[in-house]
Length: 235
Image (tube, rainbow, N blue to C red):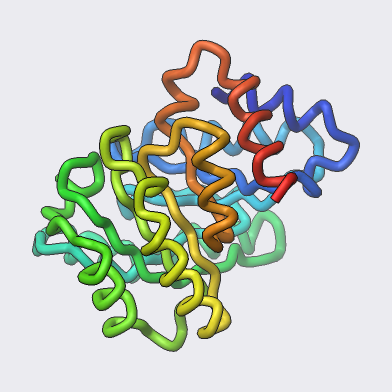
């Protein structure tokens, strides 16, 4: 997938204007090449879109990112995960200072609410998430909203195509209206496979759409990436 992304970036005079962000993270292992991957990206000598770490572990950090996602888990019933998350928030300042020393600036935290709708997914299993219907999910989001969040992320089924956020458009519309009323952005993800699903999510009010598994498994990820980008541009 790195090769496909690199080719797309190099085909544009100013890739920073592409309607995408580069999220790097891994929910399976502690440090599977996050910093190495970002180092390769930075060597392209291009003006990149925002580079964001979406960490699956407190040690999954790099001094080369622009942002790091700092979640508040709304549907987590696993004590160990909550402890690990708190530890990550406590000492992520180490990587921030590394960036400060190298580049003269801090990466920015993105504080957001993270709502997982299904236990039948990679993230859902790890969090021991509870299955939520649309009304339950909306109540969870609105009742636990924090005024300092700049985003909320609703994920229906990471790594599990049978539970796609694209099948929950009514919830996306309601959540989008609520988040935008709070001057926050709505992120959606999980089980996304087609450009039509991306188009539907954009129309429903999603500001950012996270796509990963289908690109990692695709025979021609570059073409699929282009389809997704076109779907976003045309909305």
